[in-house]
Length: 361
Image (tube, rainbow, N blue to C red; front, side):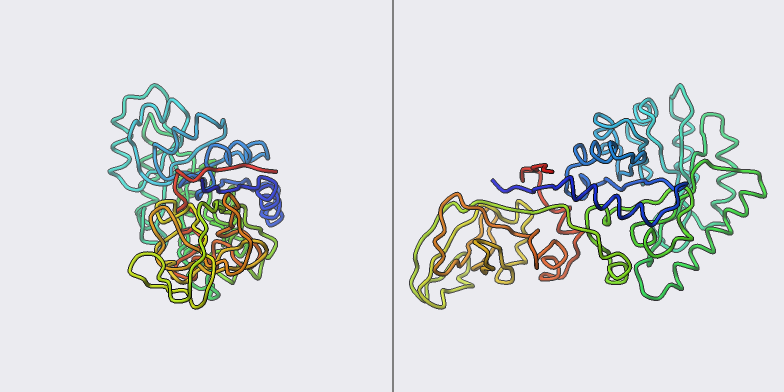
């Protein structure tokens, strides 16, 4: 079956690299949503917790409850998802408040202890949260609510990986204005956090108490700007799959659906057990190459649901031999994504659950 090989030693290396950009007083909140960007949230969370990571961020209540089974560290749900709110509070999972409606939902919950919340402020992303002036008023309402603790306040940057720093600096100014309003009301949250992966590397003034790296932990950059700042990050995942069938074909032989590829000369075709249902996108049809026997060989024809075909030329390929789809020198998830117009995040999170995760050191 296809395997996503997760190198935990490389994961540790990336954490060390990120920490070199932080002051000792700043902690890590690692984004581990979407199954740790496809790497496996349970094992990745356990490994990072062993390295001293004491905060994790997820997207949904379901992700939070699953993660709590394997880690003891703090968990924050990034969105106002309050399914099973009583259970979330029982398991000490921090919730996001984005507006008055989300605060009302929490206030009405039947809980036996204070609900820890982080107030999301919209400083320019336009996705969740209120503008800083309204958010400051909401913060006051939160601290006046008996069963709620304002544990943290945060915002999210929309353009911190751009070469032009203007928009991000404007967001930081808005957030500082918000913090100023809190100080006027003597409101002091335990945690202030704004920095995603790019800002962690490019905007040290945004670090505050926590930083929230995601893609950087898994070895990728969101733009060439941060790549120049920190070139030491290394991809953690390698995707491989086995050859299941081999045949010789004559020049002109059509391969796969719609005969979109025909053999340019007499060659050998290897069928490989991976397809778009495993997260190897159909859009890579006739665009991608794989690594086998220290060579790049082209994908031949339409990517199928469960299989792809490779033109292996005159290589002596054997059934059971594994090919590498990405994770070797020259092709990582970012360069593979570029072939069909997307980014490393999309490639990594698209690796399907039926692909076996194998953890190595």
